[in-house]
Length: 469
Image (cartoon, rainbow, N blue to C red; front, side, top):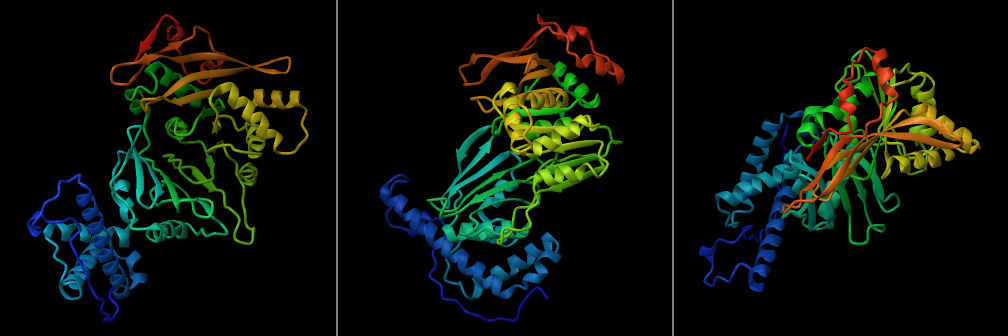
């Protein structure tokens, strides 16, 4: 049964969520202090009404049956119950039809989804949801942050939604463990930090990913790179070169990694390793692995390094590490050096040279006491290509450099830049202007292209051909 046989009553002091001007004799201006105060009072009363109905609804619902019901059936049941509560226990609530519909929708979101966040999770234009406090939610659309009108009632309301997210992936968050990474059912990545570390209340960040990862044509249309650059990157993946995608936070590293992975042959066995699963590979022969944090006793942790090591026993053709952050970089490089060509990973770094320095420092975290020159030769032989991505002031993301590792000179890793994006300024609308340009050098990887039957038009590397954006 969906219903429990309970018959509790609750007292009701109710006022509608948004005032009807016809109910008031005086009409303060919309921006007056009186109007703002009245709006806050009405909002508080609406939250109280919604919370009373939500609490009463949970008393009447068999929670064990919720997951087994079809969404439309569950919505019908919720609507029926809320109507019953409004018509009996909350009959003094002067809600008009639009306000009742809003209440139905909000209660559905509380029971079936993530409350005030649910509309953003249904909006494909939203890339990030940033909850700074219970009453301040920012969202990112098209590379720009905007303050939303949605809020949680209080910290307790926000924590209830956080607990719902965290418990669904078998994790926990409390004062003794105040930080957690999780993911939503749609693959969105969630990070939460709560007091005492977060001074103003719980903080939550949600990085969203589209249902279908962007394809190369989509990124070309968005002017992230040109058609010629896209063909080069496609050839890099198909010819099994090892690639590191470097960039800052929010620069589009995972988006590009998803895009490039589409060119891995369907016959290859791919193993992905991530801290929070967010890659969306479409091939059939994919094994997805995810790290695990320690439990409350500090036991049970499974690190990225352990998963990389284990993946080598799983007969992979290619290994994809979502992001290298520590000592697992050594094992990733070892895999690249021992026949697992065509592997890919990402790293937080602002330039290709910074990426190499970071990899060097992370390899040293493996505590293997490797001489610096040997370590650099190890890196230079493992990685073939570094693709640098950047986010610009107008919110656009671009591939701004592709560099090929060419070897060593003394104890220095040498690279050559194949192409670059060169910004020239911004227009009157704040859009970044610039041009893509190949730098005129013939990459060493062209020989590898030929070995696997990929033909490259030499004219593509002509430095006189620039593409302005």
